[in-house]
Image (cartoon, rainbow, N blue to C red; front, side, top):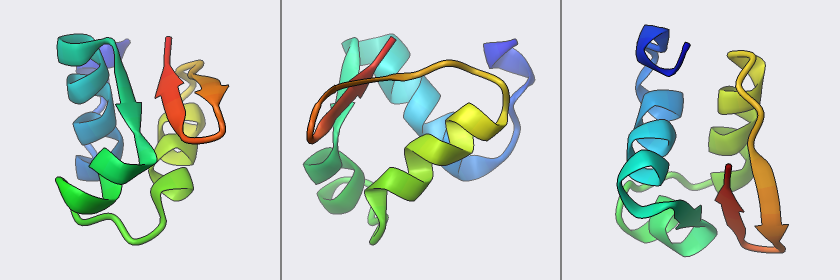
Length: 61
């Protein structure tokens, strides 16, 4: 299922979490330039992939 995601924003989040285990809102903003980081994680959920909010600013499986 993860490999079937082609849209750039959710794919970026998925690839980062697979490599590092989690992603922060700061990384989404500073590294990837997403001005609305929660939208990026919502895009992952909209692809049918569950993603946890680990704290106010961290996301992971």
